[in-house]
Length: 197
Length: 139
Image 1 (cartoon, rainbow over the protein chains, first blue to last red):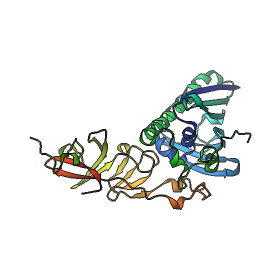
Image 2: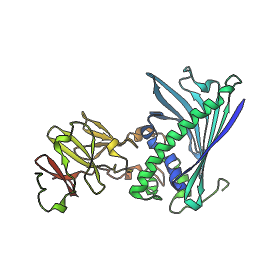
Image 3: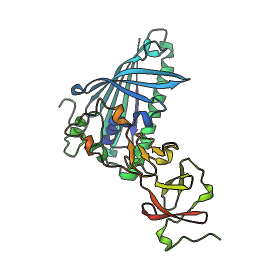
Image 4: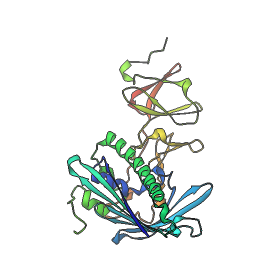
């Protein structure tokens, strides 16, 4: 049975910064280590902007994890799907529930800020369906918690270097995921393109 | 009566650090006035007074992890590891974590990475007080 919901809020930062922070994978296992403390690239198809990753975390002395296909659709769309428990034998909701997430960042021009829209689709068996709101709350709590850590980082950087300063993400020595696409859309010579372009 | 800082008063930040308030081997943050915070690490007879801002992306070094054995500081944002004594970047663990994706391209040249280094603040100790100089570098 499918259950869909949307989590939407405004991030007080320009679109170029919100997207850069998402693509700045170097912070994932440090800033967000509370949520997962290892990140591993299993496979990638960079021309199609797809990366299969494994992330793990520690719970009650056990190491749990999952694999997930991530996909970037410029300028501001990020997909996560094919989430599987890893190792396969660990107890996980992903054995019985298929999860697809679509995160879309869009510009709010009047405030030079970003609308974050997370669309979740959970495909679960009927016996899990009564718990759908509980699962939703857990997912929302996780998403808001991670976003708050990002926002704290964004706000501190804005105080130090300026609200619209994305120069570090553009610097030729700095690694971010799908950098060429980011540069095309948010670099100094960027032309704002739509996914159709 | 509190001892006065040596030389012209405006050569130093207004709020000195009390030496006796420092614990050994841990990261401590101190407000030295005018909205400036520094990270202080006291180790044996050595005192490190560092700018609280990571030179990479501006991360809060007050929340950094200090390794006493290696004498290093790890930034909480991106895990960059710095040598506290020299200030130099010692390790960027992401070079290993992201190795499969870090392919040089027209917009990514890892060999051009700047020599990130912690900013050591010069200071002078007078009695129990540490006066942090407005000039950078160790005294």
